[in-house]
Image (tube, each protein chain N blue to C red):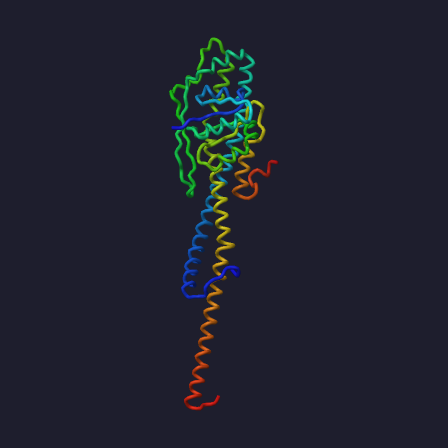
Length: 107
Length: 217
């Protein structure tokens, strides 16, 4: 049995606690990266991360792309949607196809 | 290729021919695998995009609700309200095999089946906005989990497609042409040797005949 975690700035994520997800508020990217690494080794199947933090830890996230678990999924935080999440999807397409054939019509 | 030295022997030729057959068969299989993976990947990635857009809009509006809730009550109140969650969520992660890529299959279970257990506070000191905010978040969550599943699948499949494509290209553009030139080289060399032996024999025959019967040609 796995659990789900949420990492990000406190304001963006505290609501998830009510749903039974575990929340890990972090204040800066260094703390974020440490927490992320600790969680990735643990029993978490899904780790949601706010886009703002994900943007700072992009390099670390790449590291987890190839591992079957955990799935690290960027979500928009209170600061709004930065397009980081879609960028990750684009990256997959580029990796597989060689060029972006899914998103090129909207930007 | 010209760079590598091959022994022009019959044994080497048989070996190379066997290798070529395997390479061609492998190439065909890998190409099929790549095409099928690509087809499934494109379906998945379209689903991923749609889900992501949906989840992002829903989360942005949920966040707005939370902002509203925060504005309506003191911070300490809010902290206490969400300090000890009643609900607990576990995820069971199975795997599904798609063209030898293990993609995850998530399913979640809450500790108690009661929907209302997500409100981990008494209603006396909190605003209704907080209830609304939590409700809106709980409505998106199944989609968020689906998104996690699909997005992870896409990432894993993309990596596998890249790997398979490399293999296909290596077979198609390096391995198979190389084997073909080597086979050609050995066949030519063997034919050449055979001709030269033939000629030598003819010459020797001539010489022997000449010696025995004093024939002149």
